[in-house]
Amino acid sequence: MTVARSKRTDLLFAFVALLLFLVPAAINRSPILYPDTIGYFQAGKAAASAAHIPLAARAAATPAKEGSGGPAAKMGINTEDGVSDARSVYYGAAFTLSWALAGIWALPVLQALICVVALHAALRHLAPDASQGLRWALVAGTGLIGGVGIFATTIMPDVFAGLLILALAVIAIYRPALSRLELLGWLALGAAAILFHKSHLLLALGMFCALLLLGLVTRRPRWTSLGLIALLIAVGGIGQAAFSVAARHAGLTVYSPPFLLARMIGDRTAERYLRETCPQTHFATCRFVSRMPMTENEFLWSGDGGAVGFAGLSAAEKAQICSEQWPIVLGTLRTHGLEQLGKSVAGVFRQIASVGVTEYAVMPRDSTTTLLHPDIQAYRARSGIAQDGMPLRLFSGLMLASYALGGAALAVLATRLHRRATACPATDAWPTRLVEATLLVVFAVLLNGAVCGAISGVFDRYQGRVAWLIPLFALAILIQLRSAQAQPAR
Image (cartoon, rainbow, N blue to C red; front, side):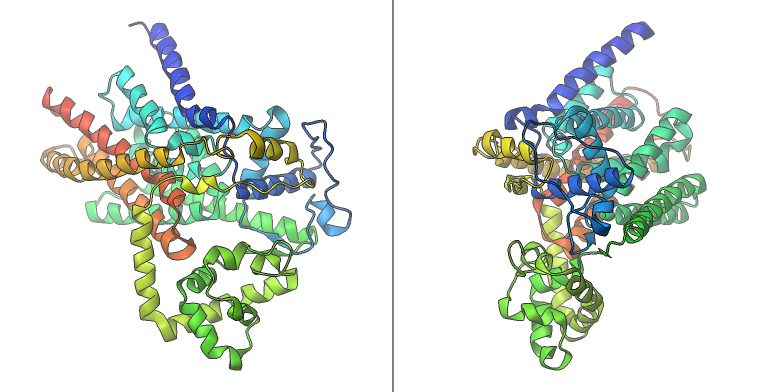
């Protein structure tokens, strides 16, 4: 096959794979929107306003004016209760600008295209012996059955958690084999993913530590790769700090929602501690004791139309609750530490086993005060999710099955691969590289479950966003092992 023909075939396969990634959105008759989608849009609108980029409504209806003056108007945010850093302004900017240029479909199509390119680029190194057609079949299958497609076509940064793990694994293990353009592409993807959500920064830090430990154990420290990952972590940290500085410069109060406190309240350990100590400590958080038990979501996000939860408080009250988080958390650990440990461990295991997208059935709230109002109105009226025509449970079942079967297969295949790597005379042969990449990815998938299950809450989309990596790596190992049986070890 000539080079030109091979490239044309790749383009055709890529187009077909992209269409299969878009199947969930086609069934839904819309990209999937979620309540948090609006928060990201507002964060992006704030960034656009701060950069003096005008955004026009994409429908005849004229939304109510956002912001009326003062510091909040400088950043285009209609709020007097502070600015949360829970929604990345960087992902919001990507969403808002793509929406302004090409409408609600622009970002999901771009995300799907990024996934298709990234998965194929990774498989060129993970499974170099796979045929052109088989490699593209793996990409398409991972999108449709593994669940990447439904995350790619949802306007949320969830899809970038798995892409971050993949990017860091490729940079860590296969950097010497990457062209300059490939390396820049993986670095750009990693930087964007870290900036798109705060939890992704924790994943990057965990993978950095895992790579460092792996180098010490194997006595082959990959200093250049460690330096590149450290650079990406620094970009994420600086990006988070830059947002806070810019918001405060605009005269806004910036706060981080007290996720750990909320989780302990949901676990009821912090509730017990508050009931025991509130008569003496007079924490501001004590105002919620009479409404407990509360789930972590009820504590954090209820508040529309009244001060029911954290979201309904004023900026000063939120700041006070946030300042109390660590005293309450540490006090809870002193008095109910063993109980909390047991609940945290149980949450981690439940999160690791919870894979799906059923949470996307929650509808975004409509509001005439946002530029997204026409799109949300149409979504609530015509989408498959709104009309109970979107098979979210079917998608979740396929994802869970591929995750469970892939995990079982990976345990067997990785053992065989490790034996081959041990017998391989070259320390940098393909079995060794694939074993190390698999170790990093499995660690990161488990770390994702630990971070979400212990700190945030147990929701199927949290683990679903990275679960597809397990069957992908299992199939890559299977292809390489079968190919190795037919040819001498390289």
